[in-house]
Amino acid sequence: METIKTIQALDRAIAILNCFSNENFSLTLNEISEMTNLNISTCRGLVKTLYFHGLLQYNEDNKKYKLGLYFLHKSSILLSKNSLYNYTIQKSVKNISDKYNLTSSFQLIENLNCYTIYSSSNNSKGYEIQVQENTFLPLLVTASGKLTLAYNASEEYLNNLSNNFFNKYTDKTIVSLDDLKKELKKIKSLKYSIEDQEYQLGVRGIAVPIFSKDNTKLLATISVTSFSEYLEKIKNEVIEDLVESAEMIKNSLVNNSI
Image (tube, rainbow, N blue to C red; front, side, top):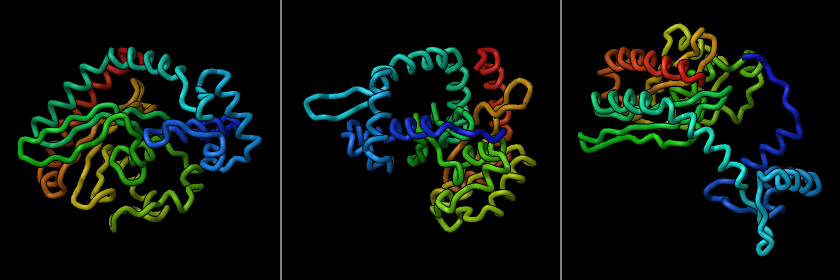
């Protein structure tokens, strides 16, 4: 992936939008300023611009902003397009989940974002590990996240990673750039990625890439998550099925120009 020089004003505007969440549904200007570390004057100008274009709404009564209706319109476009291939994805993911009694998921990849849009869990054995839908996966400690880094992160991007990126979740978490680069090289050689208790002890994951028609762009991943010992026992069979499912999903994505 080529190194992209971003525009500061847009970076700041996106940072403002990223302040809003289920926990922070509406915010005052001062709260936004504090969360983004922007001075109040700069923050006010950006917020007003986002409001003007409908990306933010403003409540005169409580003096708070929230996300605008703009996003409902744009999300409806995305959901409509996704519906063209969701059947193939859901069928493939659920088949793996049911066959192996574990959690299987599908992630869309855009640049260095890895986003879970569908997950299927089978709890016929009484226990399950769930993967939340509509969430971004951390890149460093998940199988799909590491695939994203392996194929989409430039050498310059990796070399500029801050110490904060190497957040230690468990004793198995990769905490150095050298070790990360070795892991990414291994992933590209194997053409699949394994998460071995790096995010949570006792939990293992496997993910395979889904590429564009010419195999130059990483479009998505399909993955499984389960208890470490169980997944290790069935690893080879699971990888074989994941690769087969990835090819089916790839054809669906390509045919629908996603």
